[in-house]
Length: 252
Image (tube, rainbow, N blue to C red):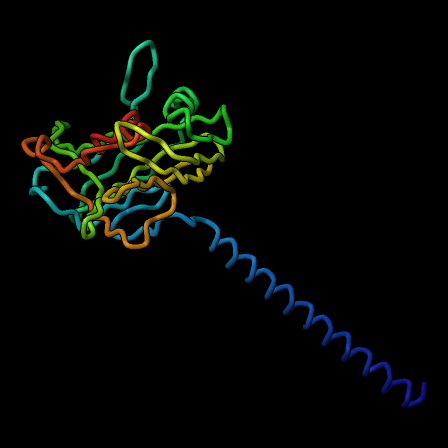
């Protein structure tokens, strides 16, 4: 074999090594890109900040209101109609520590859900007539003896606008769109529910009350604690949509 053939083979071998290295780099970059994109898609709703508004986790921090000295742990409930009467079903619990708590919400089976059509006004358009949902109605505070000593609520105020947030479970993807008229008030719905837990925002202070799954950009949510003596004096909106009132939104 002459020296030119040897040189040609050497060049070919070097090129193959370069091609393999280039291919390896492309694969590595592709995997990294897919990982980043997947992380970005995980929770488009809720920022998980001080308001604790992520969809499937309640992360309550910087709680204000009454003294929380007697609070040991926290439980979260939904109301459901089972065995021919209304019952409370626990969907999560957590320890109260460092003046806050974190609760991972459980998945709800169909028996704890109600048809959306039974909860909203006839004028609203629901994309799936078989869709079901339920919501958190109470977040109770307990002493170390297991006695209810208070309640936590999430709401906010900005100028003349009041905000509320609710965790609602949906058994599928569906939307609620349209306008509801009730006792002289107008409620505008723009809700895009995803299967699982969702955060729904209700804000009032103008001629049209808004109900949406998109976080209001100017909202300033804060977790509040009230012991049993303060429940009757808690701030509540003077008017509520049928969806919020039927889902128990006077208590959460």
